[in-house]
Length: 315
Length: 77
Image 1: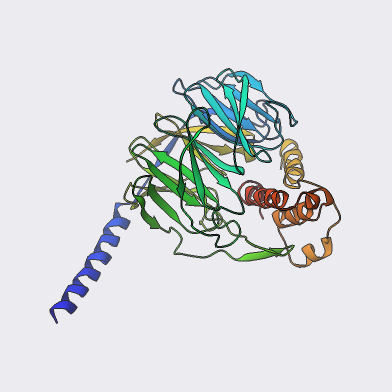
Image 2: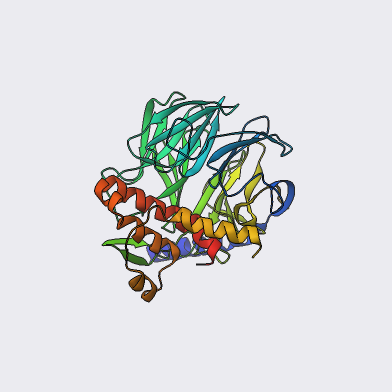
């Protein structure tokens, strides 16, 4: 009997905690502070990746221009590098980038490696990787973390030093569960913390490089993606987490995909324990979100012609 | 949709389609595939890609993931 009462007590506490968590949710307001590009501008044609340095300069990959571009903190164009091709410093399908120290690390989709530029966008070298890079993020202590996709070893984040030497790896999946189900975006926080947002699964996870997985949670009721069979490959067709990033206070911002009420616009703000603390809705759909060192938010607008920078105002 | 946006939307489709080759339009249309599934099928049935074997197929699948994330929402798929 006592055990039963205890179980009911625990269940009631869980319900109460969940209710409190819902009550604790707040809506975050966005104040636009900068806009780069636009329908009447030639600055950006179809941007894909963005990152900033500590001086506030903004680096943007432009898929339609096959280039990496640098703007100052006020959004003024400074320079660009790259062109279409497969030569040194050239791009075929520019995707993501990260800024760490005085180096810019860029992902060109067909290249099994990272393209390295200096802050003046002078091409330095290619860091070879064992597979295609799906995401790249600066590590708080220096170097970069790269999600590398291979058939043989799915679910792997490589930890590289500044020169591209492998210092370690995070295995978040032991075996392949299905094509693309290991596709993740990553966000890194001090203390060896790695957040994973699964593109084709309703799953956000927090890992610690030393201790393994801390927690795993869903945001869309644990829904599963449907599949489409294309040329013999059964592939998921519904997106869940388009991107995620973490601010200086450890808050995690998760951009919802097709499963969200507003695809590419709904952002869920989690605290480091995974509790949902706030939500916000972007004015326009975005494929990614980026939080800089001063906690400003960068997202897509005008279908990729414009990059918007916002101040996040918590009530 | 403004002129510039229309041009970009069209170019996006080309971006999503990594290679050209014969493929079964009829089946794709019949099954109501989105642009990403169609682009993936084109990529996988391309003779050049097929000659490359597994790594190139992986490249096609990676492209599909990017398309689902980036391109499909723009086209309302």
